[in-house]
Image (cartoon, rainbow, N blue to C red; front, side, top):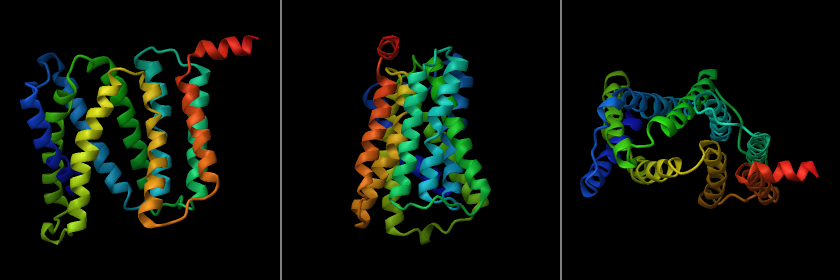
Length: 265
């Protein structure tokens, strides 16, 4: 809780600064108050606590694989709440991507292990909550600016998590290493500010099912960057599975009519 809260408290001043520079409101419209509470709790607060908790007990490989199940939940929620028609090509593309990711993790020798089953459920719960939030944002948040959408929820979530951490975790803040502070700065500035702005900007313009494929692509870059950073070799099969993964993404992005006509022949 403490680390998740610190991450968001680092990000909040930058979001607030952007809101002032762009003359964007930080408050949601009054008629969106319930949606504001929903976003604050189910996107920023609970899921990031669950992810931080889970990663203490679950290996990075299994974490990546479990969280990349989010496109499946987005597919289901899009059909339920947005009444979007789900095509077989989208299901097939996500399935190919998920399989490719599993093979990439396996080929790189990343462990698919966990020390506590609650950690596994925590990751899946976080993925479900994020998927639901993305889908409902497509419907209820389309008229809310990206900066407005993030600023106040991330600030409130940061304060709630940080103070809850002080009460329940009793952290020794003076013992936080410089390396950990650098990691928090990266998560606060790059992953939170830049990442959230870009993702929610795209969410306003793309189908959430197609956009959700990034959660399968993310772990691939994590493997590549991790191999470079740690100086570990990349397996010969990695490139092949990356190509298969991108092919899966291409299938989800291609117009369904393309496949209908092709198979009709």
